[in-house]
Image 1 (cartoon, helix red, strand yellow):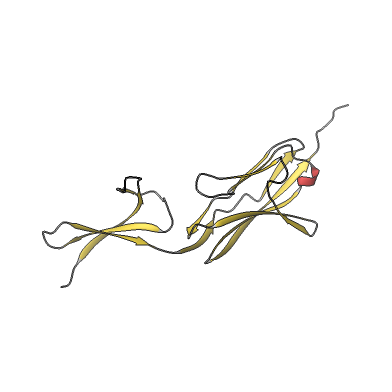
Image 2 (tube, rainbow, N blue to C red):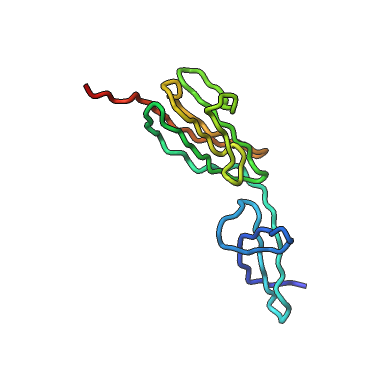
Length: 158
């Protein structure tokens, strides 16, 4: 039997009680439903479709200027399916290091969706000057965005 459908694509998420909540907002890059009505008197049929997606990242600003002692706050906005992993890399003068929370003034946190999406450094110093790269990876690939962080000293008036 051939079915003709007038389909509308809507994003969907499941609540804790298992009910579907439909919305036109972007909730997840990979889960959406198609609701079709047969061209007969039968009710609507809804299919949930789970798609795999490579990681995507919203580009960071090109640069930021700070004064010694300021707080650096960067957020890596990303999505994909499966959920991507985020790492932060600092590059300066040919050296590169993955940032971790070993140093107490460096904090990697969640943006509510992804672990390590936020990078906060309190009390920045000249040593924090450099290029900071957000790497976003899942099994389908890796994307990255880089921002240049400049740190200047306090101006002293004589």
